[in-house]
Amino acid sequence: MKQLKIAIIGQGRSGYSIHGSFFLKQPEKFKVVAVVDLIEKRRNLAKQRYGDDVLVFENYQDLFSTTQEIDFVVNASYSHMHYSISKDLLEHGFNVLSEKPFCKTANEVNDLIDTAKKNNRMLAVFQNSRYASYFLKVQEIIKSKVLGDIIQISIDFSGFARRWDWQTLQSYNGGNLYNTGPHPLDQALQLFGDGEPKVKAFMNRANTFGDAEDYVKVLLYGDNKPVIDLEISSCQGYKPFTYNIQATRGALNGSMTEIDWKYFKEDECENQTLKISFDKPDSDTPAYCSESLNWHEMHWDDKGEEYGTFFSMTKRFYEMLYNHIVNGSELEVTPLQVLKQIKVIEEAHKQNPLSKKY
Image 1 (cartoon, helix red, strand yellow):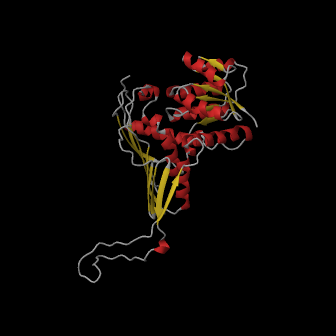
Image 2: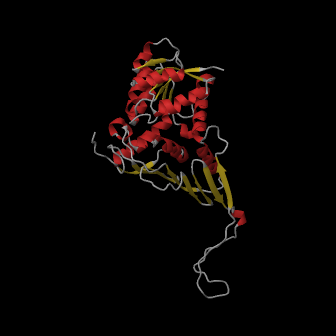
Image 3: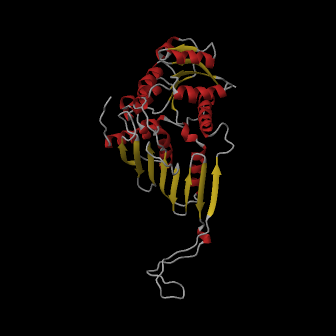
């Protein structure tokens, strides 16, 4: 089995806790050979964590002169640096896996796509929520058609939190939509399907100590498409669901660990005909039309997932990436798909301009 050699730029929460922790659990396929971080204590920690033979650098440009074989670079730098660093890496011949947000603008995305093609390099985006167990189950249920026609999909990635780090700053491409948004937006656009959605967005600053939004409501809609209602709020004290689906023959409600759905079968229902008025049986008293449907109720949970839901979706993503690099299989999460996401984020910010304070 081929072992891929990796460099990680950034040892913050993403580079350290997500990517680094995963690679340590998959040593037969992945080996961290170089780490870049501006903070000395994090570089020292990388030596302890990945072994004395790992190369550590303060500046990512030092990767350009190393003779160490590197199969791809994980760009887990600050969000506002993703575009410029990814472009520089591609131009110097590296395959790149960028953390989210991929870029700030659609023009930046298109430029990276062109740069990757020009240099014949891989360009990928870490959208691991595409492979989350609960999302795969939601897709399976929708595709089964048991719910009938989907009318509305509500997605809630909210919670209650006050925050005062760099992710609250517009100058760092912070805020709930650029930070958390790429996860549910990637899922939402997969469910929306082909075409560009129309967008209506609302943003506000609620509990943030920075100048970027921490309340977001985005509506995606289009002809012959369900309405997708996406919310990412930091002032949601009671979390009702992650997914709620309204449909013509049933409904779904669930979290990231449990999903319940119910549906009725038309061949088990009475044949109804339109009437203008109703009376109670054996009476002239007016009544409301009603029937008792035979509901088929189902349940799913993520019990049995190795190391939990988050690890499993990261593992599925990296299995896809590994097969792409080693076996030449198709890249399932493409920059062109993520381009649609960035267009939605751009439009949401255009509709809700916020003053810059920092």
